[in-house]
Image 1 (cartoon, helix red, strand yellow):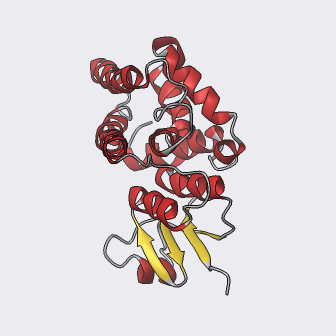
Image 2: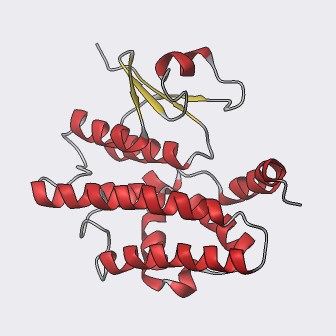
Amino acid sequence: MADQVILLDKDISTFGTRARIALAEKGIKYEYKEQDLVNKSPLLLQMNPVHKKIPVLVHNDKPICESLVIVQYIDEVWNDKSPLLPSDPYERAQARFWADYIDKKIYDAWSKIWIPKGEELEAAKEEFIGILKVLEDELGDKPYFGGDKFGFVDIVLVSFHSWFYTYETHGNFSIESRLPKIGSWAKRCMEKETVSKSLCDEKVVYDFFAVTLRKKLGIE
């Protein structure tokens, strides 16, 4: 009997993007179920009763929640193709460290970029650039964070790529001009169909920000 794989997700979701890329890297066929995050579906509430959030991977009726956990699960279950985490325990631990850094630092920093203008926005921009600079230093001259092969840390960071246009447009800055190695890495990732076809269009994300988030935050 073939595996039944369902992904509960939303197109603009940074975290859902990670699951989509990982599944694409492994060549896993799955059923995609777009979720309404305001009127949450009974299935989502059933499969993630604790956080009631996306993404949720449902594998043979068993739910797996939280994007980093999902990507690692995908890598462990379908381990015969395109390994995402290194086999060496130390390198694997380092990959998990940087994934944790990305989630804790970038997610916190991006929320501050919604500040409309002035010195606070400039400070938020510099904080965001500083976080990416730490990642750029870790990347160094390697094609990908794990070396020659696209992997776990790349998936975690590139999932924010669709939002970069919104950050840059709202904040009036260029990530590529400030961080050329990150810019080149992003282009390299986007050349992979597993990435480019998994990410939401950046203009769709920007429209969501302009219409939905700005109203929610009271920014006019």
